[in-house]
Image (tube, rainbow, N blue to C red; front, side, top):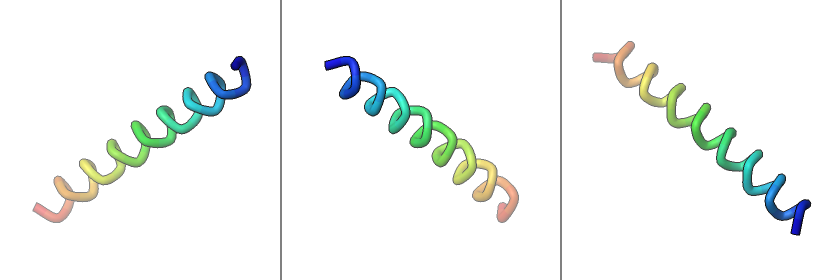
Length: 30
């Protein structure tokens, strides 16, 4: 249960970073 929660948290953090990077990339293009 703890391992699953930690994995989910890591995935969520990676998604947030990727989303922020994509947003910055789109702003840079525009």
